[in-house]
Length: 130
Image (tube, rainbow, N blue to C red; front, side, top):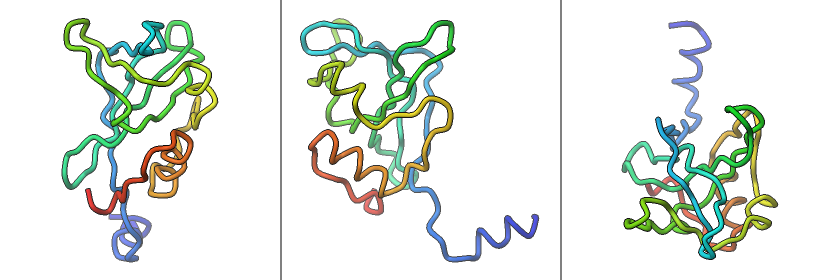
């Protein structure tokens, strides 16, 4: 173990509470009006409880290039089991104006989760509770 690893495990700093679980296939996401918005790229999963807190949607791009990623609180997605896709109650403009990244994902900590919740006007979750 390097000095950096030892310092990071004994410093008392909190570790990441969420882990990103990237899907090996895309699950389509439509608006409630039936417009195609994008696909679920990954889920943010609480390490302790295994509960999904956020879905990361991918929009745009061609052949994997130029995509943007948008985190959504998982409660905003509804599964349409008949069509095998998720439906969200927000429109494309709201989604595209929200928190996002193209190349380097942010540290998905409590502060970032709170900013996503504020943007979508949903109650913030305490990630420490799982």
